[in-house]
Image (cartoon, rainbow, N blue to C red; front, side):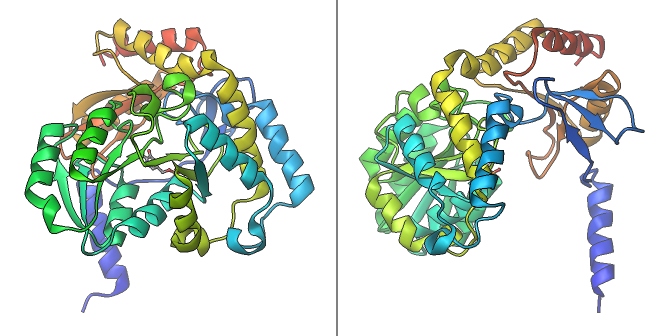
Length: 389
Ligand SMILES: *Cc1c(COP(=O)(O)O)cnc(C)c1O
C-alpha cells in the first residue's frame, strides 16, 4: 500500500521531471497610476519588473475611482456579504451591476456569479444533462471542461475554430440527443485568436444547438469593450454570453448575459449561484465603477489591442486580433529560459506549459494593457530583439 505522503511525493516527482512543477510567488502589484511595475521577492529581492502578464487589460484594478468605490461599499455594506445571494447576501449593488451588463451586452438580463469559473460550473449543467450533447472547440478553457464534465452530457471536440468539423459532428450525432450546446471561448486565452461566433451561431440555428461563448478575454477590449459577440456581428444570435469581471473589469466575479427566462431558471437551479456566499460588496462596487469607465471610454478599450499590434509588427509576428500575443517556443525548459531572460531584462512575461497548453507548444504569452506606456512597450520590443525572441 502506498501512503498519502508516498503518493504525493511520486506525483510531484513526475511533475518535476516533466518541468511542469508550479510554484506560488509573492507579487506586490503597483500603486495606482504607476503602470504595472511590480516588486518580485519583496523589498530585498530583485528590482521591480514591468509586467506583460496580467489580465488587467485596462489597468482598472488600480484605478482610483474603482478603489474608492470598493472602499465606500465596505463602509456602507460591510466587508462580507453574510450569506448566499438567495438568502440575505444580495446587496443592492448586484442589481445595478446586472442591469449595466445586460444593457452593455444588449441582452434582456444578466446574472453575476462568484467567479467566471463558477459561472461555467453553474450554467452548463443547468441546461444540458446526461442524455444531451455538447460540441466544444478543442481549445476551450479548463473551467468550461469542468462545467461540461459536471453536466454529464456526451462531449465531442471539434478542431480549433473549424466550423466544417463542428457541422460534421452535429450532422452525425445531433439527432440522438434531445438538447445540444456548442461551447467555445470568444477569445482563446493561450492563442489570442477569436472564435467565428456568427458562423457558429448560424450552424447552431440549423442544428438546433445553443451557442455558449466564454468571453473572459474579449469583454472590455473588443468592439468598444462590448466583447466578441459584438465584434463578430453575432449580436442576438448567442443565447449564452458568459464572461468574467476579473480581467478587463479589474475586479472579481463572473457573469452570464442572456434572456430573462434563462437567468430566471439559473436563479432557481444553478448550484454555484445558490450554494455559495454572495460576493463581498466592495468587489461588486468595484465592478460597477469599472464598467462605468469601460462603457464611456472607447479610447481606453482600444489601447491594449493597439499596443499588441504595434509590438507584433515590430517583431515581424502575425498581426494579433486581441491583446494577447503568443510566441510558441516548444519545450518547457526553453520557454522557462526565455521567460527568465526577459525577467533579467526587467520584464515579467509568463511561460505557459502543459497541461495549460498542448504538449510541445510551451510558449511565452504577452498581454498588453491600456496602462502600459508607449515607452514600456518600446523597451519590451528592444529586449525581445536583443534576446532574439
Ligand atoms: C480566466 C478565465 C475564466 C475564469 O474566470 P475567473 O473569473 O478568473 O474565474 C474562464 N474562462 C476563460 C476563458 C478564462 O480565461
